[in-house]
Length: 309
Image 1 (cartoon, rainbow, N blue to C red):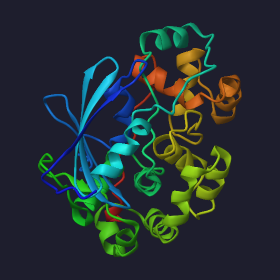
Image 2 (image 1 turned 180 degrees about the vertical axis):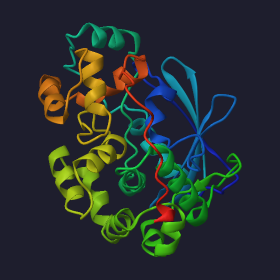
Image 3 (image 1 turned 30 degrees about the vertical axis):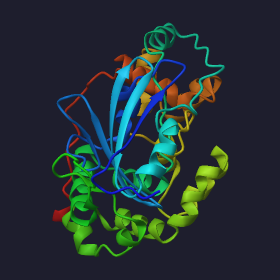
Image 4 (image 1 turned 45 degrees about the vertical axis):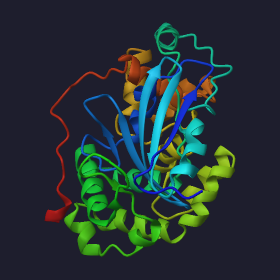
């Protein structure tokens, strides 16, 4: 099927259970200035992606409690619409999730439509996760915005101004080291991106693997550890159990939110063990319900400018 960039493919996804579009897909965005993810004043969610069949821009609007209207433009539009149920979390069936903690019980009751999305685009989720390794989120998002704006293609269709399609792996492989530096990316992270780009086709195969095998495949790339693999699996694979071990804040947030005291990573893993295979979903429930808490004991972490190094 051939679709012109000006002609949208339209579909309405109707679920048989509640669906919270904005809250479920919010982790896919990388800050307000993300050139691949925008929420417009009318409440529509615009996103771009690069599929094997070509680029796509899509606009999602929640119609009612269980349905979402989608308009998609570009050569990848038809192929994208076939993946829309996965993106909207239809593969995320929280069967067996029966929390005992009062906060989680209440959050789950209030947010029956919260889901874990599955984009199916592994390398697209991996690059921003690498950029976020051990740096302030503000700096990582600025790097993503600058690099995608410079190397991504214009978004097809009537996308909001400034939107771009994520660059393919072969383009990331050719980004000069000085351009990474100008974007505030240190040599370790830029090497990891270039190395991952060289094996991007093998990484995309993780969509067909078990969670454990996918994690091993991702972590076989030098520079990718458990945290980066989990952040990628949460978005690309829709893994509701992928816990971001190694996150600067997460263990403390889980501890303060559920126990009233801080935890370290081993303590968090031990505490959440009974909640497998829903550990990431637990974190999302805390975040979206507003019950994720962490006392502030000092000044905010400074943003490091790697361009000055």
